[in-house]
Image 1 (cartoon, rainbow, N blue to C red):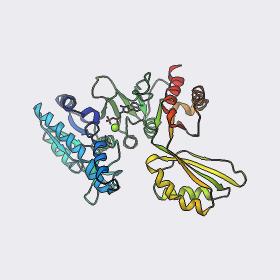
Image 2 (image 1 turned 90 degrees about the horizontal axis):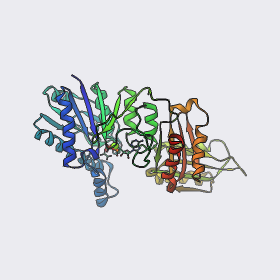
Image 3 (image 1 turned 45 degrees about the vertical axis):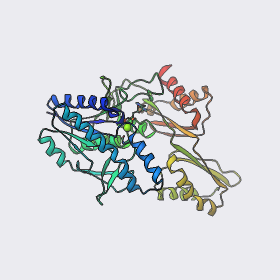
Image 4 (image 1 turned 90 degrees about the vertical axis):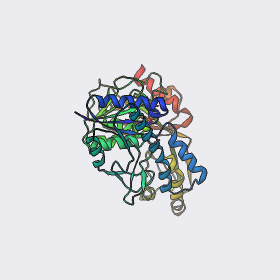
Length: 402
Ligand code: ADP
Ligand code: ASP
Ligand code: MG
């Protein structure tokens, strides 16, 4: 007998028919003699709708109350799935995050899982029940409901798999696995048989929403193999694991992130310490910076540009207002009209010319590059937002279709 964790995303439980479809998958797994723990997200667009409802009442509401509101989405879906499974005649129980033992930090709306104490889940499994757990939520040390950030149910599933030493962790979604690019946008995107944690982490962080990046981080840390597969089409999915035995591919995927902003501090005096001061202002506010570009000093002045998540752009600008004035820089300019396109692949560590191939694809499509950043297994460029989809297609074609 094995312990299997299965996670179903919002589209997999979007309506009654889909809920019964999931109930079918879960009970089939149970019928094979397995212990089954199921993690579910809110139905369809429920989380977006709840956020919009909150904003209608008070756009400046506290994060605590926002978490109280959006966590309700998963309460609906777990109970509906449990009701469907009851109807099929199986023993089942639904549990909220706190009942399932999810203890988190108190960073409302982006809480981190501190630990999962799965005593209640174990007790229910011992009673031979199928256990349905609300994804995306937990409890802070103040006994307040927290949520884990958008897409957080993936992380809930991996956390349970880690805490309970599950034999298998399946992430069911609305596509058949992890592809070389978003299969909804790039028609020739190919399904990957497997992918390493490191590559998947980069792809997820760079915008491939099929897995939440924190879930991949956690899977790597606890060495949990993930299978990403479709809840609607029966086909083998993609295995995410330590080392991929993939047919040697130069890159494993192209990702797009349009939730990004570029800030430029213009006319910074060309002297030591000013970059340090700038970025320490941002780190004090916990604002993550990604691509950084500093121009060569000229007339004792230089420009420093960098990217942040679009949702932090105003905050970053405000955090730097004093800095700009104190050091006598000219101004700070912000643009959200940008997109970050990345290629990811362990193959590029040992191959020259990968970046230039990407730039060639952009040149062929007459797309201008504003900024570039590279790491061992990734190249990212910042471009105009309107060119984003075209850029992904052009790059995908260059690497996978020529
Ligand atoms: P769920 O509701 O199941 O959590 P998400 O919407 O969060 O599903 O993630 C699945 C979506 O991720 C797919 O519908 C697809 O459009 C998108 N996606 C983006 N990049 C990729 C990729 N490289 N491979 C597969 N799907 C991707
Ligand atoms: N329902 C949450 C969201 O929409 C969590 C998730 O889907 O993983 O972000
Ligand atoms: Mg998701």
